[in-house]
Length: 240
Ligand code: PGA
Image (cartoon, rainbow, N blue to C red; front, side, top):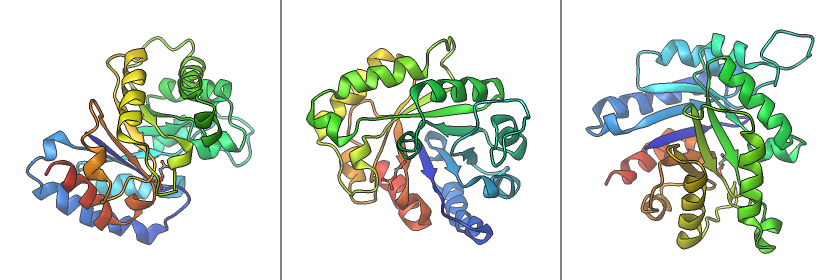
């Protein structure tokens, strides 16, 4: 199971210490060989975290990248090559918070291609908005996001899909079990062999329900991942 922490735009150099608790927990956790932990902090914290935790079970990821893997005159941007150089092994691409600010499927596709070229593994986010859910076009939206996002990419082994219904992110609302199971199964069918995670308001309370979803390979966790106690609790409860 994957437990991916998305810290979003939170965290200072001091917050790195909060991962000590996670590291200690993992060392003592008997089932740690089944667990993959990836923490995606803001870019400023990637390198210090990488240095501090490189000998532990914690892997570091980034939250986005520029679509051009070469250096260039793009003020304020960071590309996948720089992220890799800083110590990231993964990068989240296509998060709905970025789609909302204008990231298209086409741009996401370019970003994924560039990140793969730089040797990063991809956490590819897809999911429908509440409006699309009400219109009952969830499947159509997911197909479009997957097909356009991954267009022209032959080897998909380094891509993990994170299904995140937009209406679940940061709202405390999670999908009904049978709906979630159906969506996960649908994505798995289109995307054989790859890992499919769920994201959106995952917390220590609802993890008991979520972990029982058929075929789920893990979770992308926002708010609850910034609190090491909650993050550890989520992992523990998944294996209870
Ligand atoms: P949340 O965020 O857990 O705070 O809902 C999840 C995400 O945005 O990846």
